[in-house]
Length: 636
Image (tube, rainbow, N blue to C red; front, side, top):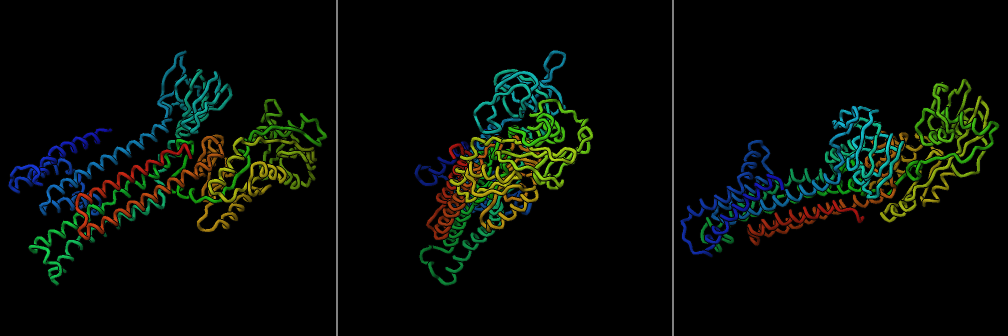
């Protein structure tokens, strides 16, 4: 509990100490005779102690021409009740309203604290070694390429490569997974992880602002600015709702007594005209208390905030509540293959139909691909097994969806798929082995092909089954790989459809076609990890990027980022979004339903101030408690 909450609690307790005996006196339960003016002055003490800030905010709103809010409603209702001689009810309404505000503040603060703790990945310092001693510096001051020391129990402050030592890392804050990860020399580590065992020396590869921890925190902090349709609806609803209920309360206070006085209907039940007006004005005040939209205004944004935080705790970063809402309507999911369904750990498994020695063909292929960061290029360099001298390579040209051409030691080399060979006027030899087939041409002549196999992710097949259970009707793989490879992968993991041998532009066209078939209510998500997936991620209703190994461009273009590259998290993200939307709808229906019934009871005189405050504060407390359920997503 912060200081502001403690101060409010003290004010509530002081006001309650004054209020209880005064209420007992006013209701004749305790036989103490006090003149009416003295009783009024005594009741004003607890009223002002507990409600002075509400009155001040209401006055400020009137002065700033922003009249119609919950503070105005409470001020008018309670002052009206006291003016009509209902001192106890007027003070009780303000007192219980502040009790509800205190509870709401504690609940929201706790949910924010839970999320902050779950996302507590911001490093406070980095250790830099100088003259044999460690010096703590701000992570912002560490330049790319510097060597930092991470001791056991410390957070990794910046992304980098291990240059000395081995250890075990706790990655739970990033991925939501409690399973530790072992790292050794030459392994990449991400900022935000916690070093558990050995001392590590790490050469930094990114500045602090570009590090993984900073990006995650930035995504979570900015998520609140992207509001869902439900949140925007509530904001607009409150803007129009409050003036309408104020006009309704005014009409309730004036029109029925005027009608009674003009027609004489119902006057016999009142001793005098003053009693008639007092009764209807009190009903109008009760009407105002009940109409306060706190439950909706507080619980709906809190539901989305808790949903985003709960997803973050599982390693699923959703960039805004608007994307959370759209995710709940996903019925079609399209996938890239490499790095998404498969691990992207390519390895050369064979060299076929080459007139050159295998080592020479691999050398040409590795040198031609030396400037590429694609996993296939890395596997060619790994199979070559020697240091790549880039000075031997000139005139490199990357042809999207085809491959690469270059000059190696002055000799023209082309490395790519069948389309590249046909483009060069060469006829490639077909291959019947499973895997990605890389054809090579040297000095204008076809020189065989290299077979590269990719390993399936352990959870890919289960991920497709979970998506079907989550209500996804269609799963499609869009890949630039060969038809034979795509067909085998689709069958192995249980996809409903696939499209093979696609260029980046073809993927966009396929997504456009799938979007047309989705209709108005169904939404399409695309899951990818490479830089060439960025256009498709942007075009889909929801773009989902693999965050741990994915490119920066893919993460930037995506709406959802999976921090551990696990496709199983896609179904969990959809379930989280649907749970959050279900809770939002429950709160809207519950709050409006209870208020409507109580407003009708107030208008007919069947509900007094006590029921009014119970309806207002009670509904708010229950709605906030329901909203906080969005934080708990581990069992989904």
